[in-house]
Length: 239
Image 1 (cartoon, rainbow, N blue to C red):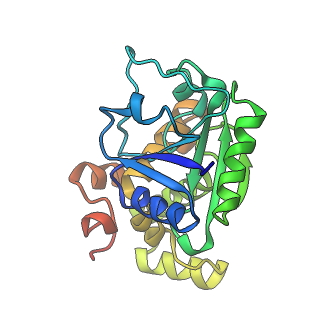
Image 2 (cartoon, rainbow, N blue to C red):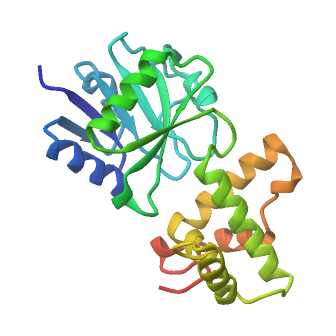
């Protein structure tokens, strides 16, 4: 029987992932709205939900129950997998993931199991991404996970350095490229990732781990102004 996947999301990442699955021979159905999710999910083995700027398909009055052969994968950016999984009737079938979108050609993914995620659900998620030729890393369900936590912390420190007048943005980016062998500098990273995503990660870290992760006010003002990076044409740099 041909494997079937339901992809939820309107983003370019959701469309690209759907195309990738089709090229691998996986039968894909992608929904941009969640109105018919109950009926569309019945004959699928995996549901893949992409982040949509903080929105969620779950509400207090909704309850989804997956079978023992189904897995729900949700892109996790600004909240714990355990918290999100608690909103469905079968949290043991729920797995978080975080794609490395900065360099998509490298095809790296973090898989995050919640407190109630079963080993076989995590294994099924790993098998899917390996079939798509992703390198998989397993992360604990902790604030920011691996890549986003390290990147957001570095970006935040770079913004503080600039805010206090220690160096210009371009000089900080150049120093990290030439001095630390980074492919791009922290301000360029921020613009690629999206300043809103960086801010949400830092807010989550601050809430759970303390004020050492408090977002720089400059970052918050940029997000409030709608300057989110490359996707809006302006972030720390103009595109």
